Amino acid sequence: MAKKNKSTELLFPSLLLLFQLSFLYFIKYMNQNLPINNFSLLKTGNIINFFLYSAVFAGLIFVAKRKSGFINKKIQITLLILSWLLLILAFISTKIKIISDGVYYLNQPGDKVLTGLLFLFFWLSLLYFVVYLWSGIIISQKPKIIKTILTTFIIVIMFFIIIIIYIDNVGYTSGRWVIKRSPKNIAVVLGAAVWSGNVPSPTLAARVDKALDLLDQGFVGKVVLTGGKAPGELPESEVALEYAKVKGVDTSLIIIEKYTSSTTNQIQWLKNNISNENYSGEIILISDAYHLPRAIEISKFFNLEVKVAESTHKLNFKDLMYNKIRESIALFNFWNFAL
Image 1: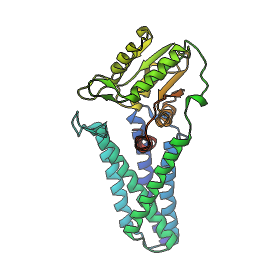
Image 2: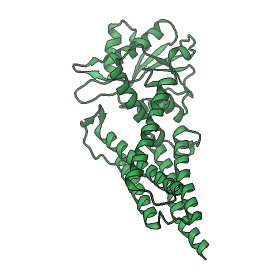
Image 3: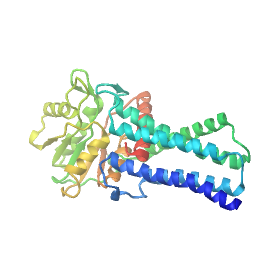
């Protein structure tokens, strides 16, 4: 009878977790307007989510079999409710504009920052659950809350360090990607900041320079300039076009996209408008080396085959580290939540 009770107690949280994982996968694909039949467990973020939930499942089973009393049903339900609440709030934030237009944090729209934070807190609550379970299993007693929080924090820091190392060593540089000369190829300049007075930032200018260089050398036949605008600015793509005109480019070879506001939006636009299905040449993404790993991962998510070329823009150590840290956070959010 006791065994039956244990199985019943394990069934309820397991079902909640299984439904939550399914809901998370659904949200990820819905965030990018993709049907769920595009789902593949082999995508990096899907694998991460799968292993995180597997760790929770395994911990609950281990606790039930050992009949440990350090984590009772009340604690399980509390942690599950917290994770569900944060996931639902994050989902709502993708549907309802909570922060008004024009509010930016770290050069990102305020509503997107809020959504990202809610999803991050959800993920942290789930990771805390994993650490709490397995800490108790290992030490065979009730884990201390402060120690569990500290352990969770250390794991998060280690995870982001791994992502930074990944960004730094993947080597998505032009020298490692063979690009054949062909007028059918198309170079895509991923958007970057515009400075006051509608002046292209050095980052944006260097990306355009790389595209024009590929065009001049016959590696591509057309160039796509992408990027929308922040308040008070021209769209990034229009500023890039004006810069290209000064360089003497034939504007008939330029395609403008001026409504997207993120790398994900830009690659989604490519998928819908210049994808491998309706374009016979190669699609070459142009950006900075620290940014290209995320662009590649997003392209994989959309099943868009691309090649890449890095711009020659060089940053000082401080700015480079800042951008790598920001990219690690952005890549983490995309892997896990398709944001």
